[in-house]
Length: 165
Image (cartoon, rainbow, N blue to C red; front, side, top):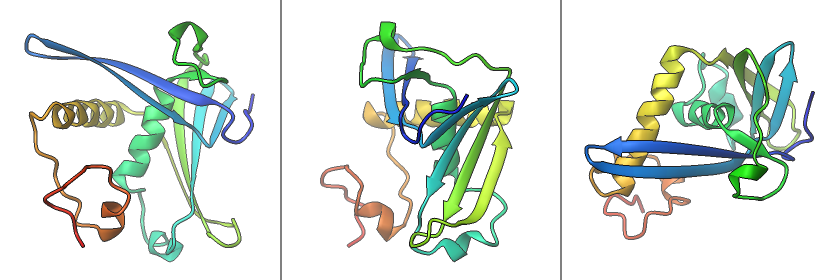
């Protein structure tokens, strides 16, 4: 089974508890490519960076790229834009696989492909990232700045004291 490019939307509903405080977080997105093959659920994300050559010497994707695929792998799915859980479905699988395909922005040609399976370490990375995001959103934890001008521009934090200009 393979779904059309960007045809399936993802919904990850995450219950969290911080002491007596309970939080229900919904993260939604749209995976570039979703495949089920031989019992594996495979999420592929394509990236078209301005400087794809910087990936040639890398052995692993950037953490935020891996986090994006892990969010999709652990989600429910919908072919509509519905936020009603009754409209969501699971895709049966035995193993979860992520692929990050770095492509030339002009030609669409693959430059570097990172692949991996979801391990316990990856699950912990996902869980820790979700908890951290929730704590930042609740104002209980300060965000760590990435020190990257290109990430500052699209950031949606208003009046960020760390903004690089």
